Image 1 (cartoon, rainbow, N blue to C red):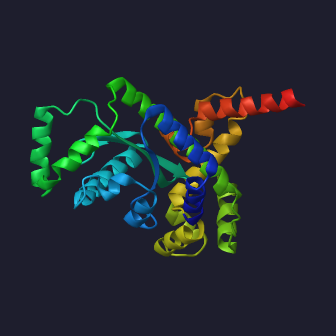
Image 2: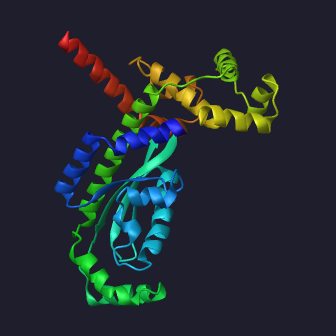
Image 3: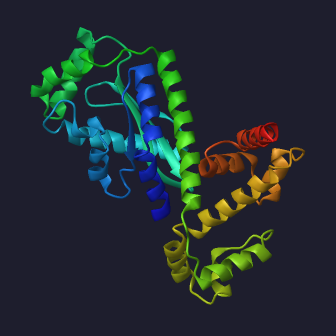
Length: 303
């Protein structure tokens, strides 16, 4: 997992990525922040250092604590379904969060906002004042008004467009992160080499953790701990990634249907294959095939 998080740090400090963040803000009027996973390395301290203003709380006092709770819930929903999630902050404004996966690991998020979808009328202000009172923030009404005053107003259609742009940006970061992670040197232990050789010989068989643990003469529990320590992945996730790599090779054949690739790579379900492939690679199998085809065509044109 350290490799994946190292890739995320490189993304977050990339001059190119920062230019893209600035371009997004210029086009949408929304701040765009790269936020590390709250449950990952550094927790909220890492999130604060990323410049995620909402974590500090735009209304002062303990509004930051409430922001953190809402951000945690939104992050979990987004990561669980690998999709954009729109949620409200304590000030009643909206934000959109999209997870970024590198090597199948949730390493960070892109966060846009805040914005409103209606004017701050009396009814809305009354409801928000009641919520502030429940949180012990009734004295922060001036901060709430200021947050609304300086946040852009987006229609439903425009907020959906923003979510689409964020998802595309998150997919781009995932693909770039996977490339960075793949370039990092990895030392493979004799045990891991033995496991990889056995899996290669039996790639078309369904192999359980217990079967493989017996093969290398370890207890299943110790095998799982050792495997995770050496690879940064669970055995199940490792197998998924191996199958995705095989699928990527098979997709190079333009005459092979995606469904054939899925089953030949070891997946039992097309929707599951699409979901895992997107999470690991950062795009769908069809999009990956089209991207590779364009790259090959561009190389031919330059020869």
